[in-house]
Image 1: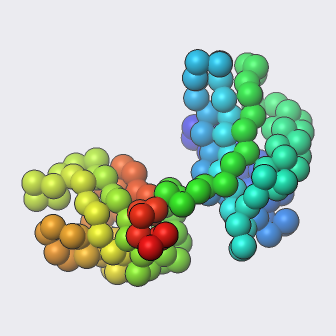
Image 2 (image 1 turned 180 degrees about the vertical axis):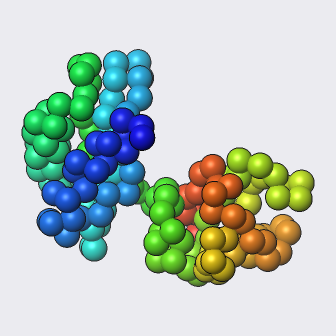
Length: 154
């Protein structure tokens, strides 16, 4: 299990108890040093005041669990309009919305897809791609997925 997933397991009960959704956790080196970044959402949106409050709370939780042994900066953010889709539930929740999908292996000759999420068929995402029509993408082959922010605004 990666350090990010271990941290996720520690903070998830705290966030769930507060009615918040943990969208993603990232821990990576950047120009300023190591950054631990949480993307959190809630019904009605996750605002700046929420980010400030949860930065303090999550900082305490992470420090107490002792999983991170190096110094780091902590950031808490909303997932934004180009929200990443990480879990099977994300694809179900955003059915009917356009998304960008990248696969780890080609499906036919294509690795990049852009189209409307039609739903799930077992362990496959059903997507109405703008160029190739209806495709079924194994969830295990999805390298990255995010909502199309242009369609959401529009």
